[in-house]
Image (tube, rainbow, N blue to C red; front, side, top):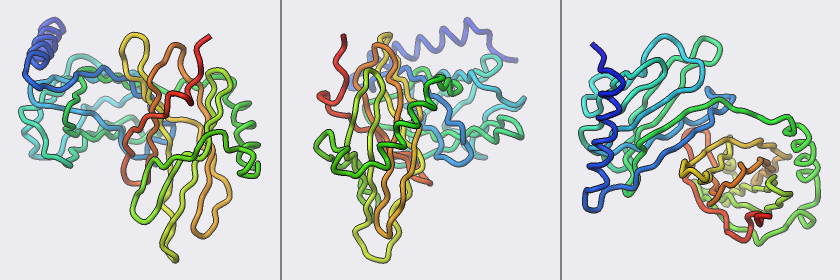
Length: 275
């Protein structure tokens, strides 16, 4: 027998309030995740869980008739159905540092499974996670055309900021070489370099941005990524995206084939100035 919506809502609010009152408890986050178009080829989305904090997951994308699946024998996390496309995750204990518990859901034969990783991260926990489809705007094709021109431009002509390193996976180094703002539209060039001769550079498969919306929700979305010509020990990419109206605190994550990257802040001086 499934609990009624009001009972589940009461549970969610009570455990959230208790978490806030705990000394040194995590900061509770409300997040909205934009689902990548190529979900089967990209790293799983990450959900932050913590003991005593219920996480409400709401899928606003087409899903199959099944329910999310945790690994067989996983007893530390309760998965409570609320209504179609919504569930509560209730962890009984924190996960071990570095541990990733997979959560999967069938999204149909064409889309493949939706994949998530449950992790415990000190200082933060998700109290609400909305997963939405990609609402690509009509001007993305025009933006991609400009991004391709930037990709083909000699590097000396596209450096608009001091290059800064953002990731160092293995023997490779990835960094943002340039950032260009045109209103709320962002263009950025990223390079990946391998230090050890004979090794292949780390493969960048996705760039995600994260920003705080005016209502306090953390929005995370994949951006349009274009790859340029690859050399033996170096790759170059350009990505573009439109920043949501009123968004603050822009952050960047670079994802590899096997795992999502961590978010790092883009410097405030590189963000657009409000009108």
